[in-house]
Image (cartoon, rainbow, N blue to C red; front, top):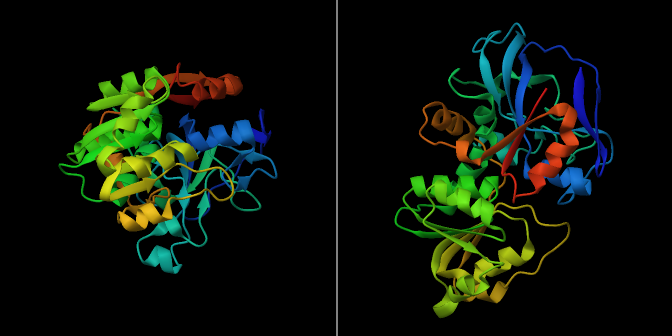
Length: 344
């Protein structure tokens, strides 16, 4: 079968790989749509994500939906012909974090399309994906494949907002109006927050307004607007970082109020970055991380299936896998696209 295999930075090849058979508790899923994530882009352009470096051929992709074509004998909740979206997290289910309900921190996590381990965990940009049955979530046929594939980034947003705490009536700022930042904005608005989102280009900010954001700031064109929020020890109750840019994170510490909270979702460059430790101490600012998701995936599927959240405004283009290089270049240009999906 064909798969999109990364051999190094900007060396992505659609090539034949061996097919696999599902195990007793596994499912074979025919790939129908897969979203290009920010981590996929980082692997493609840099050969790494944060501290994770590509050291061997890696099939990319972890935002995926498709049709069940086969199941192992122990699988009961899905059958051939069912439409599913796949949770790319494959926790061990036995370690202390899994047992405590924090499977995103699993000591033995195998996450699709990740270079965190050696051998790498191969991803889902392949014609047939093998997943454990508990990773497969049925979806209604009225939900498009591209929407269903967005259950994963929506889960990231839901987890980030959960880490932010109660947002009802709070003022919230989000750094970065890419797919994750935009979905955080949707979830934060649903939670009752007044939401401001920032970026350095206008097109994603225009999409954010369509999603219901209260205010947008182009920090490249009008840096004074964000600088004004630093007066009197900050303006916002909660800030969420979704860019992976150290300077963007640094500014968030200055625009949150004393007693506020900063949530980091973006993966920063390798190594250490400076933090204003005395400011965090003296103003009692909470600084927390939000890494992937756990039970939020099922919630994301329900929200999408019941049309309680409409993510269609972020869906920009569908590109054949044979044109994967162009798809990655398009996905990296946020003046042209937000969420690009791949199909075979």
